[in-house]
Image 1: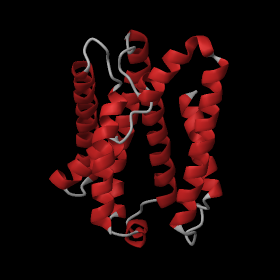
Image 2 (image 1 turned 90 degrees about the vertical axis):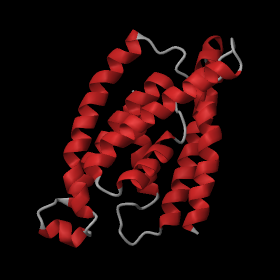
Image 3 (image 1 turned 60 degrees about the vertical axis):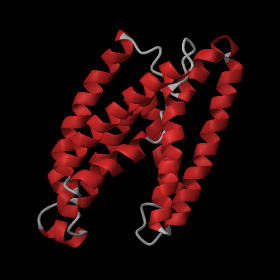
Image 4 (image 1 turned 180 degrees about the horizontal axis):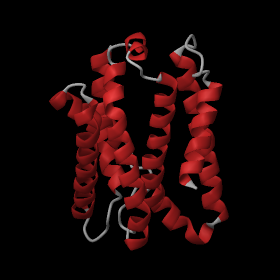
Length: 209
């Protein structure tokens, strides 16, 4: 269900933002993303109100917590993760060709539209399964790839697996910190990643100016 919801949100953002047109301004896509995010947040709050008996569990999930992850969640995660990583690594050589420019990639036989669609589907599979199990743990997808790129450059054959491993390490480290900060009360891991990720995002934004 999480993958379906993510797919619907993605299609809505891209449709409203005009992402299918190469001439559309990027600001329009950002505004569409903000609007859809606000709508999803409102629907989430409504859900919390309607299921008051399970409100605490929902709030813990929204904060991003590994506290309730068990065998049931792992059974969901491992096949999605395995399939997603295999497909992502298989896409890596063609993604490297796109770094040369879309025209050059097309001349080398890369079908740009099909590749983009496959990458979007793989992303939805990996993100949907992860969010379903532990909730939306923010900024991991921002921190891990940027650190990996600083180490390895732009070769996606290495970036994809190293970013995945580094992201997992960041989540585990955040979970350990969250358990130690206010023991025996556990702070959600998503709070720790947000405290680290927000300054990191501002640093990247400032460097890009």
